[in-house]
Amino acid sequence: MSFDEMWGQVRSAATARQHSSMQLNQLPTSGGGGGGGSDYTVTSPDLKAVGNEAQELFHAFETGAFHAGATTDTASTSLDDDGFKTGSALWTAWDTWRSQAEALLSACAHIHNHLEDTNATHAKREELLATNLSVEKLDKHFK
Image (cartoon, rainbow, N blue to C red; front, side):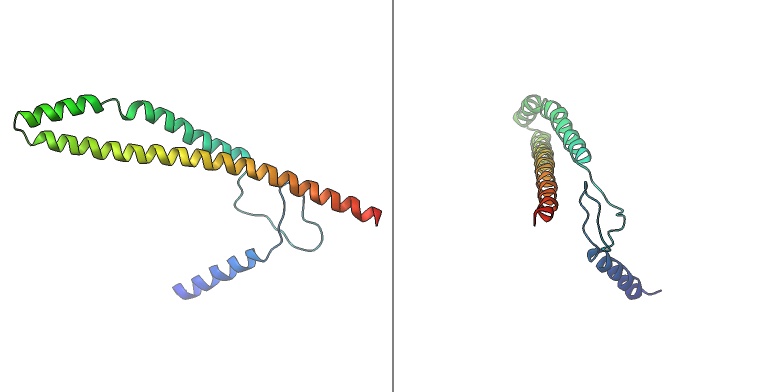
């Protein structure tokens, strides 16, 4: 089978999945709308667990990432003063490490905060949808 044939099958399958009906976590699909099983689900506890892991990595890395900074500065300055080019190389290595460590810390904080917000937003929307659907069912009986 050629790449184009395989790609066409994948696109057809994806299009078919996009046109299947929506199913809320708490409410089963009613009627003949399909709504078959999904091979990808993420629950709020999953999101919270990943967010907590990111937060733990942040705190563990934050305490250990920068402890060598003052010593490295002293060593690189001393080497430079003694005429060794290794001093500036050591400082460059430290500066690169510091920059990358800060980027990792920022990413961990961003992941944690985003997943916490996603978890809270999802719970609020889920509650709102469930409430709205319940009210619609009640309204049907009073019409």
